[in-house]
Image (cartoon, rainbow, N blue to C red):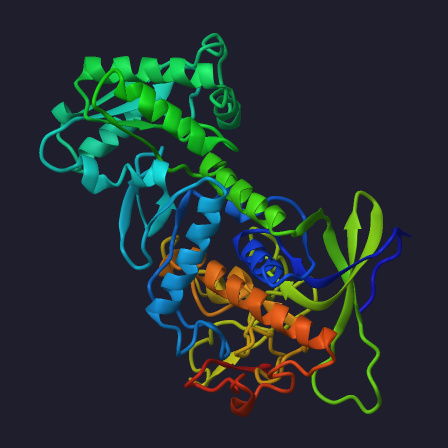
Length: 484
């Protein structure tokens, strides 16, 4: 492993280096920093967390991951509940409230008129759970904003009626203006959100919402998700209090497809929690890695010593005792499906994929199954390509192509770069990200602390049942095998 040529600037060091700064990466970084360690996150930019709808898919039981990882046997609903509780505590400390429970379905309407099934959401979205406004009595008012064409309340009204959620007489549509922006057109959501972070603007906007609700005889008002970015919790409180002065109305925000203000809010909240915990967030792309010098003959997996980061035309090195890979799947660049086979571009790790017909049931192919074989003509099919990813041992260390031995002793993986589950079909993406992120951060922190003291971290050798890692067998996960 080596870095490409280029101008090399001053290096940095950390106890734990996290590659990727989305939901999984930041959960890992915060968890490690809570142990009093120096943690550096390297990310190319805002990932899929910032593009998410605002709902968190968080099942009570995680799907099985490839290998003997956290998603295998032994993960109870209590563990996922604890992880969700930890995330909720962190967000609350940043001024936001998370609602819902793992495994309990929450139905929320989005700005396209679709009903999304999720489990957790911030309070301004959870307040609009379908069951709250689709029961007996009451009337729903869908309010758009003048100059913001991305949300068409009349269209959503027709979809609500067509879906049988409400009869036509119990749902209305309208528009209000944001003071100071009424003469502008094609406003981006972020522009509206920032304008409403001015208290006087938010309260004037809320008065218009309250008047519209009173005139429509509404009991619930649905707004597009534009009530602030960094100050979203405060803006939501200002608006609900001001609307209540005009009419006894429940106000909520809809979820949003990307580009998503709710996703940007979640990313911003996690960034704030991370910075408050002492995490350093650096912008850049990892382009290479160096190994620790090993005594001859070397035994067991190799250790990473550092990674090379390219940022604004400069290369710099980041050395660490422990590394965590949380680069996501295809959209975020954590896996590359641009060639014939799926590849992991940062460390060249083995990527495991679902077996083709006739493959031995106890094994999974690593590295060579063609992408075109894993994508079907039907859009809604359970495409195997979405189950591709890394296989890990019980310590969340990515396995080599043999499916048994970790490729590196001090590298762990978390989030959707892991294989074995389908983010779309299983509805578990956020749950996997948070649970594996927290676990990777904890394990990395313990190993880094042990390394600093000159102690051997638990499970430092090859993955075996005795060390707690577990060989990847049909009972505990998947065995990788290079196809002939």
